Length: 317
Image (cartoon, rainbow, N blue to C red; front, side, top):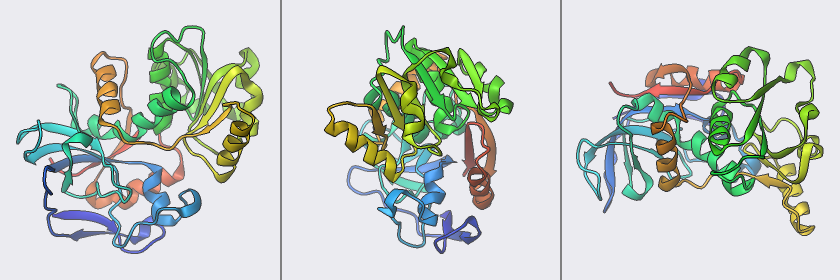
């Protein structure tokens, strides 16, 4: 099968196109023909050694990518040959930048009727990160969140643009923090207010927030905690060592003010997101699509930090 892989650790210049043996589905596993994948910052951060504390460094050659959308070619569980499925691969080593992947049925969800492979590949990692950050870490109720004020930092990015939509669907009042050039996109996703961070304006000028979902991680948690209500929680989907330290500090004071979000892949959560999409309350904004052979260009675009929504990799027709 064709793959795109890092032959050495470091920058996207180390990505090469290559051939590798097809994976063999283990007992009870599906073999999936990958139609599309997507790029997330963790892909190039792991290759460059930038992941927090560098706890996980994949072996070489490294096939980046965690999101897959494709077609079952070896059946297992409730998924017959030809079924359209998507997944956030549960492995810590990626592997999605390939024509075939083997995955257990418990880790996949059926792609909703009418959803493209590109959109199905864009949702899993970023969508589940936003969902778990809001629901599990910031304790935003997914139904009946009227009266909650939510700030999404990096509201036009991969995780952030899903966070805006999930919070809005929950019934919260949503403020998006992004650059002015992305303001209309964020409004179209459902934000009630949009603040251009380049102007220096404070998002808290209109009141404190019950939830702050930081999808950028460029500022310390202490920048945001003064903007929280008494019940408010700051959750970072791009945590640093300092984020974990502040989480521990508040835990020792029996308060839940700062949370570091680390994704736990869940097919049930993916199905929930699919349901939201089927109701028209969630959509993936695909900024650019690259063929697998141009994965290096896709990683360079992600590293530049200007992506609106998601970057998709077209693996097969």
